[in-house]
Amino acid sequence: MRISAAQRTENENRIRAAMDRLLRGEMPPGGKCDIKTLANEAAVDRTAFYGTRPYAHLRAEFERRLRALQDAGTIPDPREAQINRLKTENTKLKERLTQAEQEVNELTDFRSQALSRLAARHEEIVHLRESAAGTSRVSRLPASRTTVIGSCS
Image 1: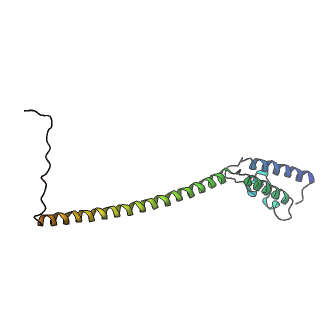
Image 2: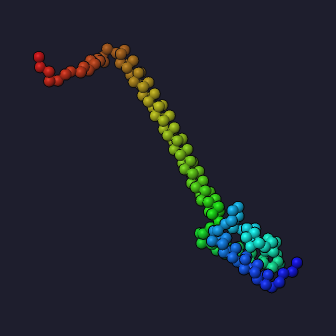
């Protein structure tokens, strides 16, 4: 079905208006910043944006403007921005988890080494006490008594 030049101009104006809204981040419910949503918002058949169809140049313009915004760090689609933010956050959390697991492993190794050293020293002390008890040349000191200082009788 052929359309008149006036209809084509009207369609292009609707497409450009919809393009501007989408690139400003004004997404319709359930829509994205893509050609399908652009076609729906402009009330134009989506196939008219592909190949040698009448609005292929507008699709190229839309994609160029969208890419320019993305290169500048602006993402017009709030869902895409949220997805990117969550991916970044997820990556950071994975790094923190890996670091925490490494620290836990290091602390577990340290604990094992410390317990092993304490057990070895305890065995050494027990052995020295046993050997000291068997010789008469070693005299034991009396156990310390606590005395109260400053009491006068």
